[in-house]
Image 1 (spheres, rainbow, N blue to C red):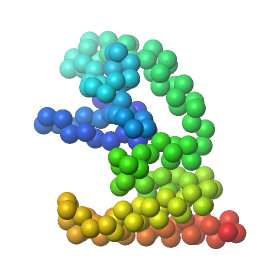
Image 2: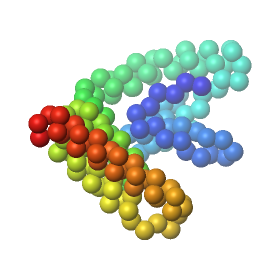
Image 3: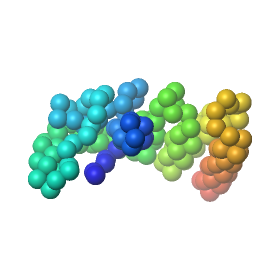
Length: 153
């Protein structure tokens, strides 16, 4: 299996997991038709099928994926690709990327939004999961404040 993704998330499909390339508000797979919302599965049950899939995939990577990847030049731009509406539980990653890129104000804003989300009452999961989310947010908050201090902010 070969997977290349930015903000790639597992999508439950049938009995196994499927992975997609997520870009902005949609989920996209690199398929024989190009970017698509449907399955990105390439046949690979045999060595012959796998080789044919990789051979067919290469031009699509060069034509579609590389230009998109070339447009991303900073960690903040990677963070901008994380969709907060559909994946609020990943906003801590966005905050950390902004911090690593030196954008402390955006990092603080993002971790504040994450902590608001983490502390909201939930009708899913367990209290232990929520506690882990809150602790993660607080840990990232501390990392951001340490980075800000080191930068003289």
